Image (cartoon, rainbow, N blue to C red; front, side):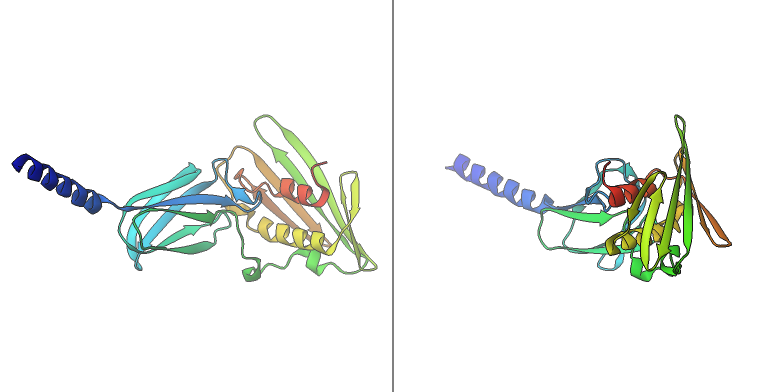
Length: 230
């Protein structure tokens, strides 16, 4: 009988110890807006701050990992504070009310276009005008050049990318507008041996940008959106 009671007592102790040691986990996953899926490559390299109920809880650097996991969390309201590649500060709130694993996506390459002050050239283009974007990409094993010309004639917009031409739809115009807004942040992209240099020429206005981050891939996604994978 004593042995039986001892077994029950030890079981209860183990059970309560197990409950006492249970904590929640927060798995932060990096979302790639361009690919419209979770990042499958080294996406985010920056500082992430965690607040608990509005107070500083933890700060750490993400070294270009696919995700970050924070263990040993008590119940409460947590806020993930991070900076995108466009140097915009973002906050995501996670309410932890159970001891389980929580998954939260954060977008490292999203941009709130409605908050941008920069007016893209395509939005300033008058009838009969055109502007050009010259791209030169250099890396350890490559050196390429591409030329883009965008024109407006009789309120019809068209693009010539090297030797390929296309009449632009309203959706295409929005894509180019967003591309230009992102390009305006290119000076904040760094950390890669490959450098993509853009020169935007419109009338007497010439603006240069350098993307040295290997994470934006602006011209690649622009061409893919406008012309597909051809």
